Image 1 (spheres, rainbow, N blue to C red):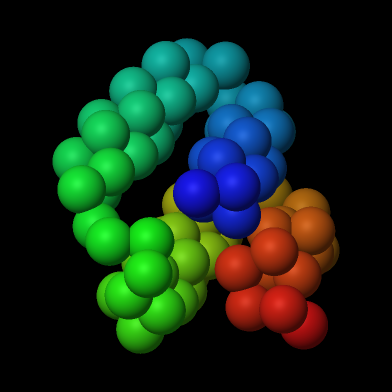
Image 2 (cartoon, one colour; image 1 turned 120 degrees about the horizontal axis):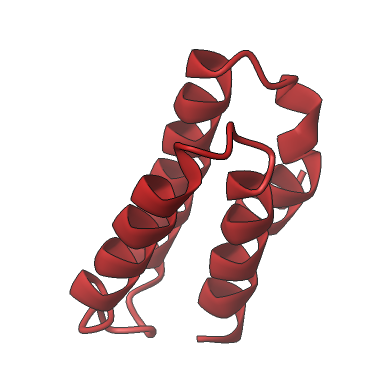
Length: 83
């Protein structure tokens, strides 16, 4: 659960890099997804890994959509992918 909270916090930091009018939408979207996936068994390593990869890839997509430098997600990559 600790890793999931770190991912959540880091994605929220990335939302702050988006244009001001887009931030509420993505913050709400992030919160809803976090709540929707809280029932995933933290002991299911494969499911958790898949969620972390999805969070990272979706974050990159949104950053690219708004022309935010991909390197902004370096910390998220290290949390999600361990690289």
